[in-house]
Image 1: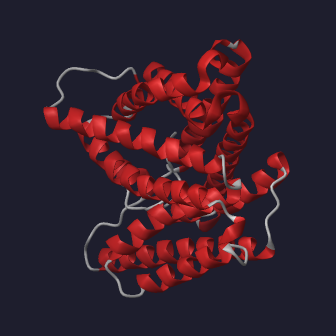
Image 2: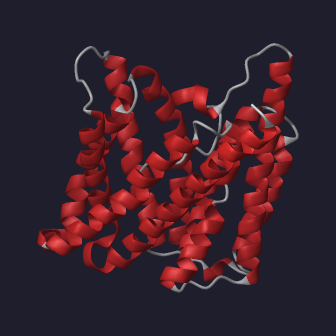
Image 3: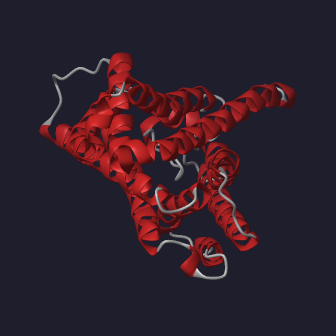
Length: 315
């Protein structure tokens, strides 16, 4: 393929990823607007339930022929999904969208640095640490400490999400494992959501908005990224995904009126730079391995075992 043909295929793919990121953050902003009616945990339940229904309709997973280990992987993946979403929305109730997503990105970033086993990777860790310090905006008193703890928990959950997703992807074909895990996560979130939201769940307009959050935050981004991954290398996709804090900051400002200080914006920029640096470092390591005879992993070919740290949570 010529260079021009490659660019023609890559540019639309980049646009698809960008649109998917925007949809996901718009969905998060809409969820914040619904917090007064259903609460963060009620919103988690609505998002997971509608996401599970959509995935079950699309994937129609088979229930026979799976090992006990496979079902345990699905259950653990479902627990991670419920925990990750719960902590993320609890953080969103206390912190700006851009700050929350930036802290959450630290999870896959740290996983990438630890997995790389390269001394140079720790330089990116120091840069990310500088970003976190700057994110305080000159003083952590501006940020709700409980919200920060929730966001850090969501970051850790994102790292576990990546590991759990890889295991389920090896045990179940196509979207089957994700659909079943999402169903498990929805069932786990159900009692917490009912206790939190109560009678609000009987309002058709709120249910419709909950469905919209699920579509914006999960279905549309997943579909667009699945198409884009056919034309993008894993490293290119990971770099695009690492821009999610900036996207979240812009959406939070536009839709929620959340203002950020210059120091907070600098912190977001440093975390993004650290993420991109870590991805590029891993990409160079893969290139060296390929030159030595190890097959290079591409996004289209890697499937569930894709070697990139910013595989986006589907819910």
